[in-house]
Length: 151
Image 1 (cartoon, helix red, strand yellow):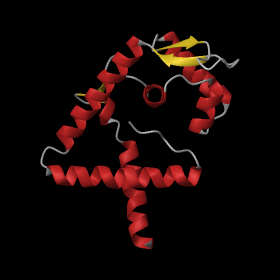
Image 2 (cartoon, rainbow, N blue to C red):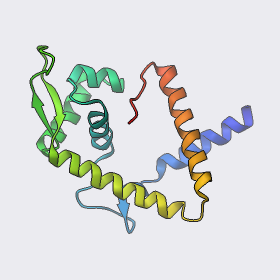
Image 3 (cartoon, rainbow, N blue to C red):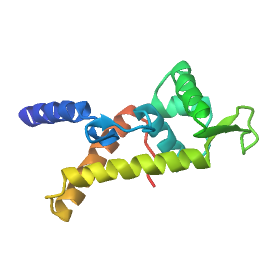
């Protein structure tokens, strides 16, 4: 597994440097969500309202980092603070209609970019790649004890 894992590491490093997913025509799109906002809004979309503590635990980040991230999406109107629907003391963040729209537009742009990259791939190759990515991610989630809910 040694040589193959070195190849995975190198390719993962190369993948992480590509920001084409959030770009059009080689430039960052106006209104494009920052990566942290995209991930945060995606989590709220799948899981529903969450408190700072729940988000901090889910992402493995300290509360001050999550506070900064939620403040930015709150200012942008992508989330709103609501009382805990279950009656708890902590207020929770919920995706707004504007946030859902921004997330949907960002996702459509990313999917469009991926379709251009994989235009010459067979559908079964894309499905296999997705399955391997899911397996890879769930392995990381298992080790970190932070499973990510999937739709």
